[in-house]
Length: 547
Ligand code: F6P
Image (cartoon, rainbow, N blue to C red):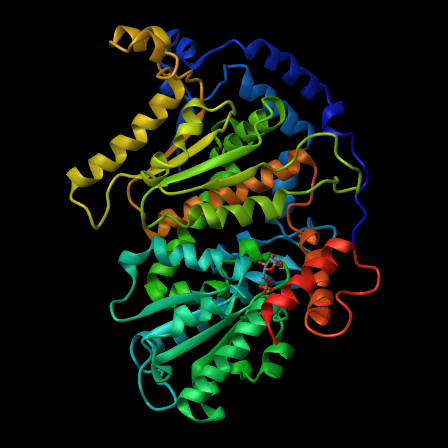
């Protein structure tokens, strides 16, 4: 652990006080008024960054808001911290590591030295090996034990070793090589494995065991089960060498599992699990879409990295998104953020973002270990549009909570005629309009609503949203969008003065699960000191589980 000198708590900074004062003046301000008084508002509060269009105009902000938020970011030395991240300083202080996911997409010609080693050279060495392997599988040159080519790849991993690759596979479906499919097994509930493999032929199946640590209980359990399934299907332990590859930082554990180090693709402790989909953890993505498209995705990441590192903060999309997030989280006291991608292919993006945002910024102490007296990371959630409109949008429009929302849309879709895409995007735009401007009871009456129904048919509006539009969901656009949120998360972590790169909060449950497992079926129900609820649950499980 690297000691971090305590800095003033966020709430004691003059910029915080200035924002509180500004917030008081914003209570009564409505988006209707803001738009009515400024015909140029959309132009002034929108920008294009790395080929993405951002509309920030439907936020409850004036010309003063972002500069005031930026004063807070400056007080937290955002610019300095960005450079510290990009140059490989050990900003993950509780684990004494760099957080250098940006090196995963650095150009071959560049160099970033960490502990005397050029990590960019290491990154490209692994990318080259991944490309060689991916090409061999895709071209049918890598054969299974019985001589059959691989048709299905099963990625076994969880958290960052699953969510990013699974999201990318769906997002980039149109780029996937026909005849090659990827499935994902993450849950320790065996049903996940059974469903993913029940129609597969072992002879044509390749397992990727993806785990940074190679000790994660769920992944190791599923990997062992997969090995049994394969060996039973092909009749020989020797088949494992042709049907299992590993992605990990833990070579010894990979070899102990029985996977040859030649079939292991490494990465490094400076890549956090939730920031790893563009490392070797993306091997399934590269197998599916090919090395060239994977390189395009990395270029997309890099374009957003460059924008984040160099654009002035008031024209910097990840910074503005982060500042707006602080505005609603800490001043309006919004508790959640909804993310609604208007794209069936992009429907797993909210699940992916949940880990990225909440495992990173769900923290209760500052980097110096002082308990915060302000809210940190909000709850992220969401669902694809238009489906979400028919489930939770009622609450967004008429509920009592403020839920800022990110609406993400793509102007073309390889599966749809333009007129089909029109229908989808019309819904996106209409929702941002309805959320912002609503409809008063008087307007409802004017439209002929019975008087008694008018309050029920009224929408207060004033619900903030960011709209992000991209030309299409290509590999490069996916990279840009992921990097956008990575940098937004980092920026917010800097302002909240928390370490966005550790995840100690997941450890207690893991340790207790081991204890519970040890007492679940035999001996006294739970360990000595366990509480009465735990004991009763174990008793009940035992009686219903059966012998
Ligand atoms: O338990 C949380 C976590 O450590 C995540 O941060 C990580 O993405 C996931 O587990 C999987 O870890 P691993 O890749 O080491 O199996």
